[in-house]
Length: 578
Image (tube, helix red, strand yellow):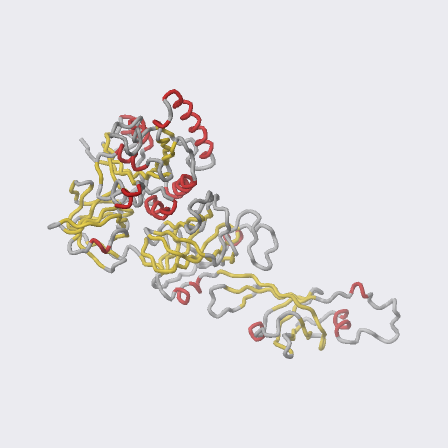
């Protein structure tokens, strides 16, 4: 008989005081060292301040055995995430390791602000969800059926535009009578376990690739060593393998591995385990990432494909700062937005082979051969790009990206999920603080990335300057005014092409005088009309007033200069097409 156990990670998320920890206790039979509010402050305040881990194991039902081939039991690892608004960064860290989310809702209150934020995190990080309507015992028995029916309809209405439309909803009472009441069996917990089983699937997991392990707790055992408990995010590790702790610059040999107190020889992606190493001070690593040698990078900046969260009402503007969560850390970072126009997608130019040390490009490749347009902000319908010559109210972009420059280096996977948020906003506000998300496409670990890597990212601004013809010195030269300011370095604009509103094309030769005027060569020559008008010889003897051009049509002839400037070009060169 095959006794293979499937580990299935279930995130327990919801608003503070919705009863998440009580629900985890009601379900769990095995508690880890990091569970049920181990933090002394948690006990004092009665709320979860850190991720808690616990588990329970059930036999796979007959109806699910075919779908879960190769397994006879499921171990549900519950990741109890804090619900308090100020701890959203901890929730984000926990959500990245889950296969399914249980969204816990107080049936007497319904959706609250942090409930909505947890729902958004679930949409980003997992594919399945169960809504648990908790505290059913707070409603009198004769009114329970009607209250449950009403709340289910409200929840399904809220979820109809999300990926979780029509998800299962179960009403329970995890701790009848409240936290201080004597321990009694919860109401409808078996219904919830049955619903969990029906929603269980085989997650896409692989033993291939580098081993990355998200550590959530670290402690020592006398005579054994130091145990790091956590979840395998990718790859596999075996007893006697060497693992790296990148944030500390240390490598350690794996002495033993346990999965909920049972010794095992190896663990793979998706497994929850304790990994024991020797001669390591547990106080150095409370939370972080451990990996096979060289699997993680310490990044100074990253490029992501950026996706704005619909519920975030403010703009995501270039040069603005956000809290950037990647791996298990949250740091401040500056955002620079750019995009690729739809016709640029058809670019047939051969891809550049950019081989730069300290740069890691993810499987979803960032194309260094393409040109990207600078954006003032993440664009939606009706947004303008901020480029001078793009006058259309809506520019069609096939994809938008963001350069995130971090205030301090962060160790993470080269393909890590990134979430941007405004955690400094009032925790009591009703508005969503989660702003955007994306996966890392390029991870830059070189401290000199602005010199070594960014110049290869061809983000351009389109610039337009306009002036007027002041006079013609001969048929092939004009003097232009108002095209540049007096203090402009005119030599930088030499040999750039211009167009006259009368149709002639010209080339800037250089400055003329000290007031910002320039001399422009007209290779094909000026038309007779323009030359006569600006050469001082327009009035010929014998011309009648009727033959002279009327004052109404003598508008100044404009001179237009259009060019591109690449944002990250160290030389600040100007480029013209054609």
